[in-house]
Length: 300
Image (cartoon, rainbow, N blue to C red; front, side):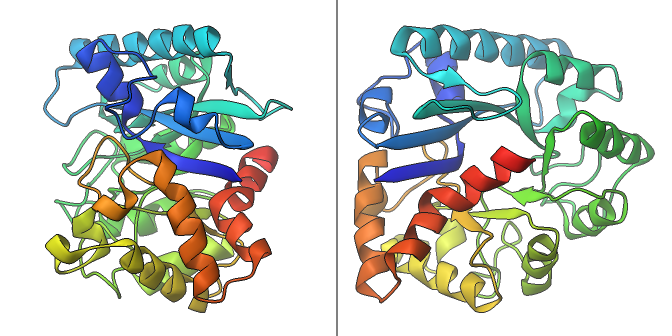
């Protein structure tokens, strides 16, 4: 079995708690991940909205150094410009572009540290534009310059957590595919963090990616009852919009409240079986769990 996960907070958690990336108590551990025949994990460093610039830079650099040390220790590749031939890979990603602090030179720092993807905002407004909690704020002047430079640097733009206005502004000011690494369907669960049907279609038309998120509040309007079946409902809706080559997984492991039926990377096998039970063919399931994301990053 193969698994490509577009978003987790395991690196941030390990760095913050001074733990390794092989902690059994975490949703993701290296030992469990390496049980997959092929495994690629997007390891995000989350930079909180209220963190000071100096602390944000220290967190970013510290998390990157930790990722390199842990990858070398456990024999996992940190993919840079391509995924290469390794069966097990980490991609370094950033959650919240606020730490760029209005300085385009900081995009070079992203490149120097092999960042493959950046979530432009978290929930609040930042120097780039509006987050999910500021729905009327779009791209700011720095944000327009920023997305242009990110494209030139071949760093994937991730609009999970973006305001609706920011989403459409990004489309207007970019040419390359964009990603929503961990966002579900607003038609299934009416939450501001989820995507409208039109947003999903726009991402699809750009040959981008959307990763299904396991967080209870984004899966179901009755979060306490959320389960693997809600993942299937979100998947079915996106597939009905033509998402066969777009749909992926962005678990949000180690950064969210995940239903018990999905708790831990080892439960991806449960999701795999549930997809087959509702009649999805093997090829489609493998595309959702691995190949759509793998193909995207292989060509971006």
